[in-house]
Length: 185
Length: 155
Image (cartoon, one colour):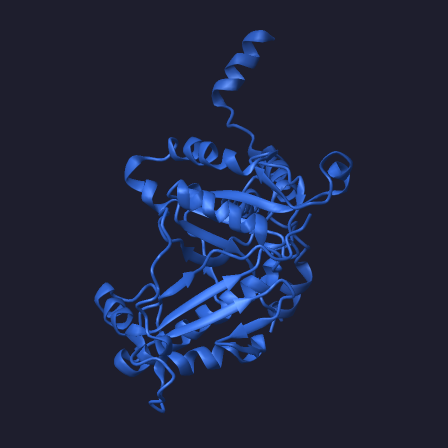
């Protein structure tokens, strides 16, 4: 009996019929444990830490686009209150200054956007403001890239192309230390 | 004539299941690739805000996560409702960030350390105070590449 079995084993193939069951078991395990996380977000490069405050007195007022978001989530842009919806267009107008106005940026390379918030500002509002400012630059890059190279701006473009565009419209967004209003107790 | 009689003779064959394991394995591999096993249980409620200018975080092994939000129901009695920071799987203070970053950094090959991104998963309804403190701490620890985690705004 035992002998016969061992001889059988030599000639037998491995039964693959249960393979599907094993695979299903693993599949169900992964199905249950999976959380397909959307790992997306707004990428930001923070400035290096330095003890002293940056000196912005040298800048001409016409080149500075000051955005303030207060603890009531209201927006103050260059001394006037504004709606988030119109922020993108205004920012683009400020950077490019198509009408060559006296109070907007001289050239895009000199344009500086400063963003300041209170400690009580809602994070959601802050992100949407930041998003609009970034969108303004993204749209300008897109437009310029289409004009120059016929394609939309993306990180897959050759480095030289990207550099030539960023040289003409550099993104300068400085964030000031927030003021202490509206902090949660 | 034979044409018609042939059709009648055909008996219904069983479905061949020999390729079933292949199909299942294919699905399995798909899920294995897209899966990110959650390494930490969330102690704070995080509902990230919506945005449009999103970039995708490419290499997940080079990303570390900071969670900021209000403690979930279970922990409210002990930790209150003020926004808190979560590092790994526990509540942490802001001054623990440098150690957390360093622990992550030593695990990454030296050439890739400059590519480490910190993903800030922050609840939309917290105030900027704590976020600002975290940002300052990140700057002090020279972890400058950060990502405000956000969801795509539905059209």
